[in-house]
Length: 108
Image (cartoon, rainbow, N blue to C red; front, side, top):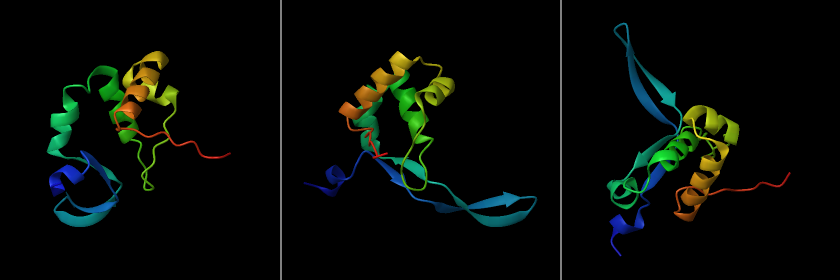
């Protein structure tokens, strides 16, 4: 199997440094995690990732923290995407079934 097929279609990258310029001054600052999409993401998911699926995927991704976890509530996702609870839960199920999201239940 080639290296291209071993890589995931998307990767969460930890904090990185970014060069920012402000009023003629340059400064390196740390930035939070970011998501990198491989071109295979386009080939494998883009045509199927529309509507609520895409919005929920992006909403969850934009909540990823430094531990590579995201914990937005259904209400938060609804506020951010405009979708109702039923659409969000359906999108979450689809995203899980297609390997784009993994729900982890932590013990109380």
